Length: 142
Ligand code: FES
Image 1 (cartoon, rainbow, N blue to C red):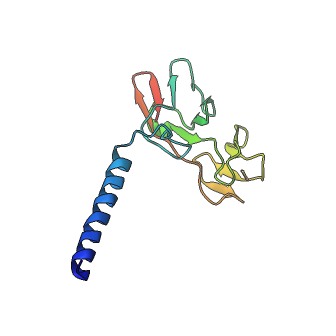
Image 2 (image 1 turned 90 degrees about the horizontal axis):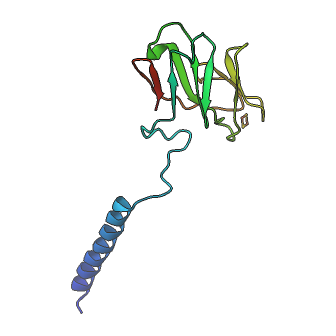
């Protein structure tokens, strides 16, 4: 076989194998695709009935690793902060401190503001923020 022909055929074979691998990875159903704390993905993480829940500033509701806190009066998305409770340092669960209006990590002392920004390390990244939407009296965090 000529060198040129060999190289051409090898290139085509390699391209074919790569294409198959790429398509397989694109079409594969990934059972492990559940979004993590920072995953987003649009799935509902928490709902609340605003007629009976989150009625006062500072009140909160937790579902799994998600928290929503009322930060202001009024039933608009900007009146709430929805965050992951997973510390960005080493993934401990942070606690909401209503008295200080912030989040504290029990593991290494990181602190986050009510909007999730780091106010004290060692964590370097903010808590993952989620989207709040309100339809009628129903608040939804996604
Ligand atoms: S895991 Fe939260 S500060 Fe280390």
